Each structure stands twice: as C-alpha cells, then as structure tokens.
Amino acid sequence: MTIQRFLSPRKWRRLGWAGFPLLVEVVGSYYFFRTLEDEPLPESLERLSRARPKKRTDPKELVRVVDWFLQPIHGASRCRPRAAVLFRMLSRRDFDPVVVFGVSRKSKELDGHAWVLLDQEPLGEWEDPREKFVETYRYPGNGEWRRESGE
Image (cartoon, rainbow, N blue to C red; front, side, top):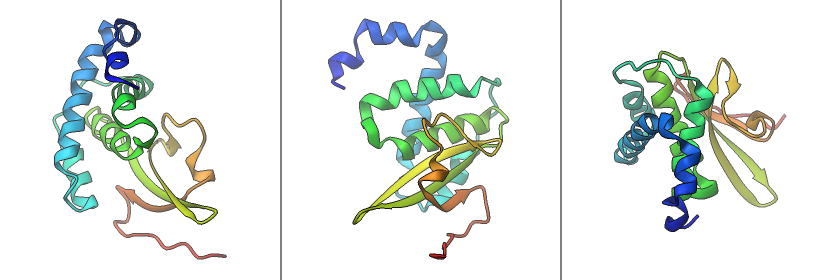
C-alpha cells in the first residue's frame, strides 16, 4: 500500500473517530517494540507485558486497529510486530494473552509465523495457525525453546 493510499480520507473514515485513541496507543506500542528488537526475545516480551493498566477493550477492535496501522508498513510480513503490539495492548487491559512462534516447512523453504492466543484460541487469524505451524516458543510459557520430534 502506498503512502498516498494510507493517508487517504477513505482509509481514515474506515478507522473512525472511535478508533483514534486506540491508534495512538498502537503507534506508541509499535515504536516501543521497535526499540526492543535487539534484545533477546524473552526479555523484550517481558518488557512489553509490563505496563500501566488500561480500560478493557474488545480484543477484535484491537486487532482491527493494529492491522489498520501495520498493513501499510509491513504488508504480509507483519506477524511479529502484530503479535508484540497485540500482546502489549491486551496485557494492559487485564487479559492473559500468549505470544506463540511457530515454523513450517514448505518444500525447501522454512516459513515462520507469530500469533497471539487469547483463551487458548488464536486471535485475529484467518486460519488456525496451529494447523500449519509447529510451535517452537511461547510467552509466557515454560521459557524454553521446544523441540518437536519427527514422529
């Protein structure tokens, strides 16, 4: 998506005025996540989870605003920042999200994905990623990388 399309009045109307305060928080959470990219994964997720509580919001509305913001920046490869921002925003609203990372092998290429579980169900995913990806890490969780046997 081009910057002109991102700034178009039509795109902003779809967000609506009610979504604007959430958008401000999404932008802040995204840039906070970007400052943590050089830190080890467990430490950066721990820092993302520590935040002042916010008013509880419908998780589907959070997904809508996060996707609205990240789509023009990251396109189809936005799963890691999306998972981190959703994790932070849900944690601040007294939900218990879990960030999951997984891998899948398509022919000779290795494919990875990150997603958020809420009440043990993937949040905001078109298809259940657990059917395609083998889980390699989750936070919070046991804190260890998982090794799946080929059996």
